[in-house]
Image (cartoon, rainbow, N blue to C red; front, side, top):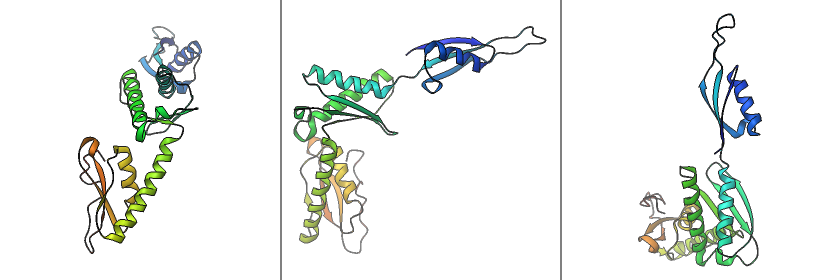
Length: 221
């Protein structure tokens, strides 16, 4: 992280001098005031203001660089785009023949995302959440799961029985829960542990309140 200690007659002047030297704008830095400074009496005994200006790390850009480096080491190339939201940093990769980076049910992609998050968080010294996508897989998967959830929900209503889905990742289970959370006739819950954890879609008992779709998840939908 680039940083510079600077002085001036006022805090603002010291900051401006540091910005010019560093070649950055005010919204790209954090400022720590070391000395407020004082004007003195009749021009004597005054003290200059002293500040420490640190250039903020562009973690979104760094996340993109990390993903690019990883896939290059794996023998792939792709166009990387980065977008930052309040909740996370989103890195998307577009290119040809990148299916291997997705893997079965997105398992390789999940591993790439985990590794990127781990490396970035260590660099930043704090936990940062990164979402990685390849060739729009995440959105396609989300839509497919939503269709599956509604289709199975219809079966549950027609047959009046619970239907368990295949084991899924926490991300995929969350999509099922969210898709059906306001369904008037079914509710969802998860059962099993580890890689065998799955969502069960069940009919709501008549005239009885049912548990929240997320109840019992313990943070691992």
